[in-house]
Image (cartoon, rainbow, N blue to C red; front, side, top):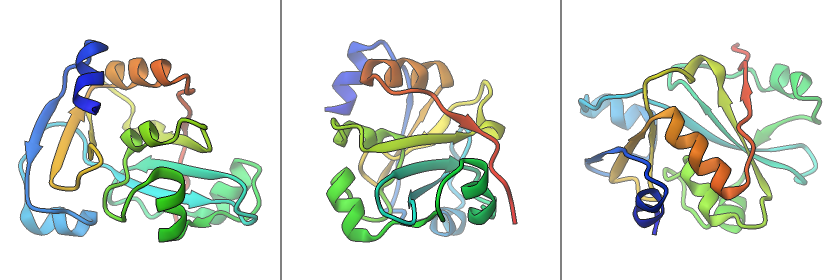
Length: 160
């Protein structure tokens, strides 16, 4: 489904197959050689559980959620549960990436991308499968978000 969509939109990407990766530390242990920028994808919710977010940032960045909450004028941000991940994005842990928005036609989940990642190199994205990584260039991500009617929200992510 995603492969067909990217082809229809003329979005090129590199496709890498690898053992299942549930988090960045597993990728570190395997020392995979892939082009593009590695990413960490956090599925967050506000304190009331009314708003949900995918935050795409660098794998080594220790995100200050309190500062991010203040910056984005939200009640306390926290990690969303496995149940919320299944309900809003139809995913299991370890498969979150911006491509998961394909499973959110109601646009209940917002996307934030760390400005520090947004340059010419492509971003690593799981295509709903943690045994594959696609490296998609920023222009391709912009085209995909426009197709889905989603804004590109680049933010400065505060660190601890």
